[in-house]
Image 1 (cartoon, rainbow, N blue to C red):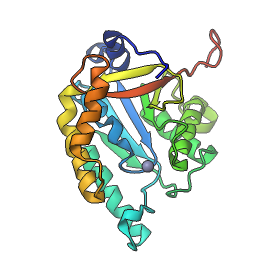
Image 2 (spheres, rainbow, N blue to C red):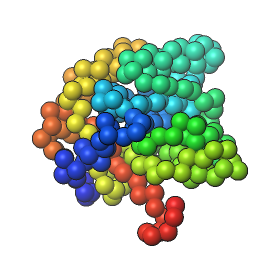
Image 3 (cartoon, rainbow, N blue to C red):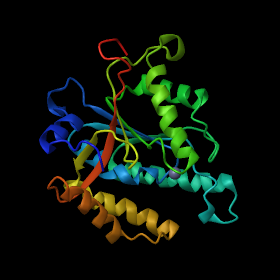
Image 4 (tube, rainbow, N blue to C red):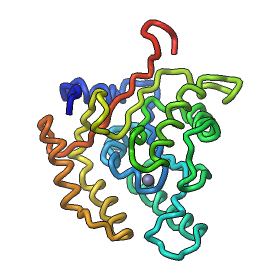
Length: 246
Ligand SMILES: [Zn+2]
């Protein structure tokens, strides 16, 4: 991939800056479209919590149209998948919530962005992780755009009340066509929880990709920087024009 691979020490600091010296624990918010989208950042969320930070998972939909559930009514699927999300949140030890947008109906537009902006203004994250803007699922792409817009709208008091105007770093899942800085997170210490969560979903959905496949992929990512296991993200530059306020 033609992108910058940060020095591991710098990157570690960038993603997990000095948690213990902060006045409050740093907050990492993960925003996704459907329960199970979070699999690629489980290790990072769990590590953040383990290091004393706070993490929150937000899903824009309940994923009620998942085809694996056959003829089960969408409302029932929504209830089951919400339970899955709750189980994952509890396994990681993080907060979680669902917004009420329709599965496969996300647009990345103002309604979704404003809902997220209010949530962001309320919870005040320091770091945000979301989907990449080029994923094949339209809900995943929309999730990225709604999140990006929300990080602007959350700064406007007339929209959100008390705004969140502190700098936020935005990361997304890696996409090979994007030439953005790559961040490796050493998730060796939380690989067990990642495997536990993946195994849970893998059994529910009978995915072909096994826990061993997952472990191998994390090992390959880790190998790039000398970690046992890693997760990878790309960082978005949220500054429109250098030197001007955001
Ligand atoms: Zn999804």
